Image 1 (spheres, helix red, strand yellow):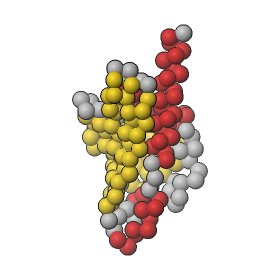
Image 2 (cartoon, rainbow, N blue to C red):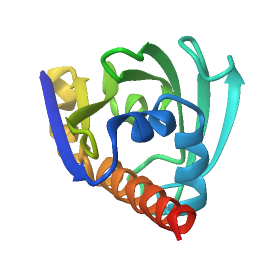
Image 3 (cartoon, one colour):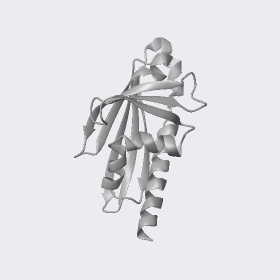
Length: 160
């Protein structure tokens, strides 16, 4: 069984500003700082934030049957503002998923607005098909909202 879910959030920020966070380790740092209930801790196990980087993310309370997972950045396209990360250990793999990919795309809407598109693509053997109900974009939506709020407040503070 294959599936995918997406979430889009329009923000009043230029795409390049949002991409500066999403394309780097700053995204994990901000997630821990702003949303410790989603991700309480992250550690870089390999790499420098570029393709091939492996992060270990410790999840906040409430993740069903999950305490952590490791993700590997497999694609970072600065031109298209696209980043793909696959789960390589723990998390959804512990629930029987054979693959779980998260894609972030920062789409330019105008010079001062953009869309944060977060997509989950997964594969699950038929015997674990019921676990597809655990897949949700709620955490990705919360991250997008938290990052956009943080960047907007930071921008207002520097303009004041």
